[in-house]
Image (tube, rainbow, N blue to C red; front, side):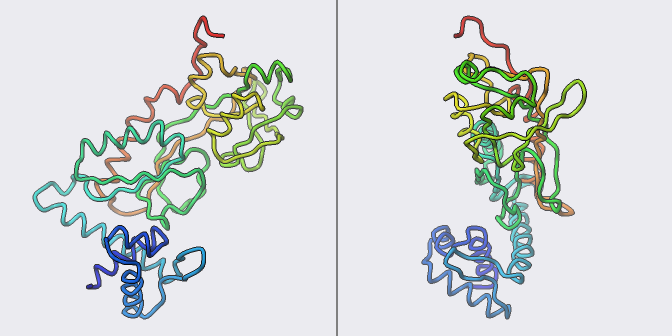
Length: 309
């Protein structure tokens, strides 16, 4: 293999943190990948990976080489795409990350529209309910909801996810309905540690912001699991309107503390900084900016449908 082929193998091994995964993608054996990466390290005169029982981890030199190599391979792909087509036409592999539920409900259909419009794209959607290093994981565009942990990235605001405080009728019948956020201290609250790791909810009231510590017997980083617990009458939650939209409309959950509005969450598209982004990145961000603000479920709770129990 030549230097460029070894670099491509190294890139995928770095992104998957596995020689075996890279081997499967390239249709070769794991020992071949290991041998070629070792040859690349010898050629560069420095180790690129730390081999641990948990998998591969980039060394400091490996991380620097990965950043430059990724840009180089993107440029080569862009150069190839100019042959016989416009240089501004989206093409190549596009890795996108997003929180699981939002990605499943809203981003996946949008990405399918994108690849239908641009058949030279190969999209990989990574769904994950945790913070991770976007650059280190080889993500081209990340959709994030809530606070931004990484100031190194370029952030494009896409819209706002309105939140609502909800509980099942069965919970309210058993425990009563709080009339003020301070009363949540006497209730079981279901905490999303991905968005509120400090276990406090913020509401806007007539007298300003109210920050309320909450407690409960169940915490998770997955909003669908919180929804399941709410529907089972296990507690009160603050969550996105889009998550509970149909439940609110059919009376399976009820909005509570209506005079106190939970703080909304901003939705962002994040990508690595660069003087000129590839067409695939700019086209996706354009589509996100156009389509996400039009999702009705991101806004106010629906009216409950008449005739429902």
